[in-house]
Length: 185
View 1: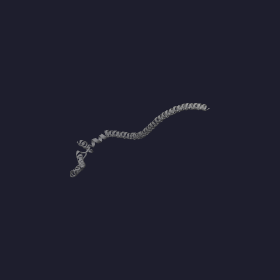
View 2: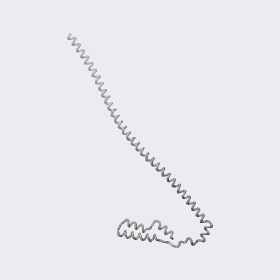
View 3: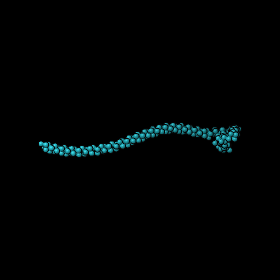
View 4: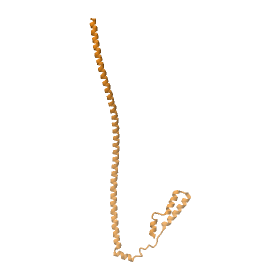
């Protein structure tokens, strides 16, 4: 009986050991596959985190580019509006200048017609002494010389380079001195 029990116990132990060894192998295979899965999923998670951070970065850059483009568009639209208004003003000014120029030309034509008329020619022939200049006053030249002398004296006393430059410029004469000299000839 003990031998049967021993044999049964040994047989049961061998079966249990074999079953446990099989289950241990299955467990190790299962754990190995799960660890492999965990590693793969961790890699996928890392890649997705990197991908997500790159996507966020790309989104931020795209949003910044959009904001810059919108800002540039607003500036361009303002420039366009200002330019359009400026062109309208210049067109109006040009029309006014053209109208005034046409009126001026009409006035000159009319004056030429009046001066070329027979009545005007008769009047000019008989009035030669009427258009003669009898006297002139050159008080501006005297005033200019007095101002130049006063400034020259002050420049020499104070030794200011700016004042000396003004005196030199006044000595050269004004912008119209050459024209006035040619007219007087």
